[in-house]
Picture (spheres, rainbow, N blue to C red):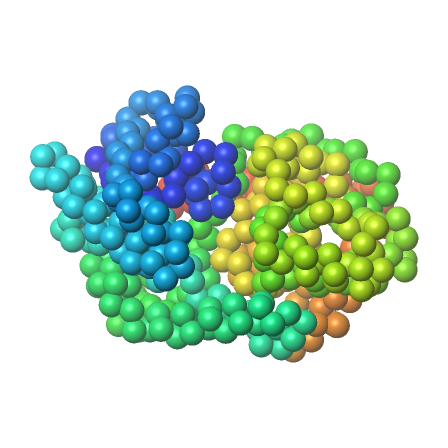
Length: 401
């Protein structure tokens, strides 16, 4: 069987969407005679420098738009046109290859946003989409604590989600698809009812089954919590900072480290000052992914209170190292985490103050937990990571179930 994967984003050791493309390619290779990955030319040097890219049966094809389009890509107004142009050019390249030596099936892997659709269904062979996301929204009552810029960004997202119901490119992809995977029930609602019989809800992210930790770690001397990812308003880090201030009334030596950068950093620093915890909230800046994974085991837990996140790859990376996770029951993290591997703070009917207290209580529980209780959570984290491996995710999607 010859398989084609359409993967705009595909790079090793980058995390996020690029990691989704890379891992799906690697784990599809054992399931087919040949796997051909169509991705950006910009990814070529990084991919070919990785020995795993030379796995037998795995081949990479590269395509990019002309330089003028790559320059305009940096302009927000042009980006959606850029995406459509790349999809069209990638389809034409795939069609030429298909005419010479036909593929048996094509998967659209990345972009993982439902709004961009895909043209690969025009190849006339079985076409599988996803898992894709894009329907997740922050509850309105949890936006009150956001700054003006954050509220505007969420309103723009709401408008984009509304417009998705009238998106001809997505509808074209849905009509051509044999099967559609979406990451959450919120994204399922964006698929018109007449095509929902094709849809399965499934996470887009998974864990690295070949690197999952099996040794229980030594606990840090004082409660140390960590977040990793972009510093964006919707990530809920203002709630985590407020929760730390509340938790320190019971566990006064608790700290929080934020690994990453982003437009919300200045605002988050101001939040830390306002709640009197600026000295114990460390802004560690952007770090290489391997640095974060290597440092994980020195922390008590990962705190990931995102208001809408379809996946949360960092959550699975923490579980793989035996690190429990504190999250909200929203999006992908709310599906991944259970009582055996962390603490899920329930959002239904809760306001910001109640969520802050819920996160603080989880921090206190983790910070005062006995070594035996923490060992139980660490074993649960590792077990959950093994359950949600890239191998099982790819096999399920390849089998179209």
